[in-house]
Length: 202
Image (cartoon, rainbow, N blue to C red; front, side, top):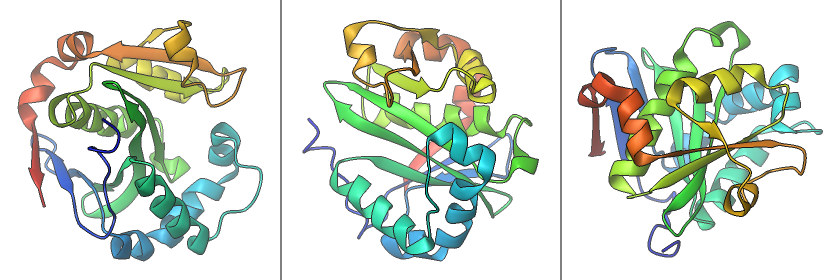
């Protein structure tokens, strides 16, 4: 399954739009596009609060960003750049894809843009991709216990705490909380938003 879902950053993949918002887009980028936005990604990753919640202990430079994205693609991760009104807003991905399941992670880069609902909207868009295009039946999330902002996003999406062995296998660190959602639960909570989201190859 993972081999079939591998995605090469040498090509351009899917674009997801939230039509009712009109300004939100998530795009699977080429490696060249990653390089263009590498400075903005590095700023987001290195922002002290973001770095703490993502577990980064060392500075990440733009060259590291390109290498990280290339390695992630080699491992089958489906990664997206996030844009609001055409401006870079963050990134999100589905990783560890196998047996119909994956882990979701995201970052809204600027702290000034956090806490305004963008994370929930972008997460919803990528979940539609995961369930509809990749055919996933479960998506998991691993967060540090004090990451209340991300926990609110996952609560809004319909995630529940999950300590099953499968869920714990997605824990980034032993002390992380792991949450999960299945397709039916997501579709119930997402409701009318599903009709506003379109997916297409770029």
